[in-house]
Figure (tube, rainbow, N blue to C red):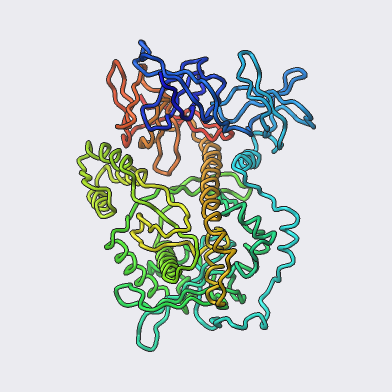
Length: 633
């Protein structure tokens, strides 16, 4: 039969599957038929002429490995006599990899990374590698996090030349440096951020003009002033692409001297900014706008928590402390309610997202896991940033200035059809996958038992937002023009947008910028994906450490993932764990990818996406970031 191409997915139990390149049904790879392929390798395979008689699955044999995916591997060091091995963190990889070459002071139980020198597909051969990095004890959360960051090419340390460059950046804004900037230091401008945040890159203001019209100001740190194109700082920021946030830590895109210092809009300190000042009507439309270089002096460093209390108009000492800004806060809340209503009317999706907040004690130990809930102040800042991003994107597009846009495309037909098949049994029709129809589905689910499930299904049907040098619009926001302008301290695309705006303001037109945007958009999309994956994996390790204190306890959860090897279940606080197939009632289970179900071949019991279960926490492994549940019988 004709050979096919695809990605090999190992099970960790000797067999695997090939996810085909052409989108056809995947193929079962029996034990010893993987042809030396490792998990996630790109391979060619030869399908067998007939399905396997014991289970009716189409089977295949791997004939060649096209591209290796595991060039470096992290894991735990084990010594056996004179030989030293690495046991990979990923249980789908070979269980032992022999370490060759120099092995300085390696101890059993260390967490380390290997560069693979031989994948050894021959029968009886052992894969080998050389030490690339040693992180410390494998049971230490910092070592675990460092290994995950290493896997995604994220460095916690800055190169010496970058730190040296950052140290030479002035720590204050001198009076002579303000020429050509709009002086807004006497305006009531505030920042609103999380209590622990130090990289404060956005501030807001609101006032009335002489005609009584609303004037919204969004003032963003002028990072481009301190990070010249081609400098050591710029090259490092380009390589990183974004800051990485997890639990109580941050790996910044820029050295702390900038991210927490001169670029951070700290209260009472002069800071260079680029301001987007918008005159708005009562319906939330931008009538006029000005984008200019400016200097501000933030009046208050507000936290989301305090602002939520103030906006709820609770009787609290905070009202006296922040008396001077209360009227502006009230006006901002009213304006952002109008902005959100306008956004929803044009077809923007209002999706529930399940973000998890991990509380750590003073020693960094996870002591609480909570579902993050958006309050009024978070919504306020979000709407201000959204309208500023749209205004800047429209401005750059209208004058055809090269820039990076944040784009989000309509769901593919395949994704739309998959969503239809999952929604139909719940009683929801989806004649089209446009944003208005999707929002109708979300609205219909409001207040129903399946509300969370419907939101989850719609969210998973959407394409992934990315960066592009072409303006392709943003489906989820129903925005014709959209870019990221508001976070240049922590996102490289925002820094590029600031450079484009600076050139406009200064009347320049750099050919280098035009040439850089396409490459930077691709790099930024890749680094964003790497950062998000690293954050997710590290937080799983923190959550597993937290759940070690709750083994044996009973919880209620919802099935949020269905695979051949088991069920993923999410608790109300956002903790996710696996019910392995072996922990389900004794049977042979058939996986239906289209309907997202596992069905017992003999007892016909069905486990489906969205089903609620009572479960017991059976185990938790911080090193693997794995929490295991079993159904409560």
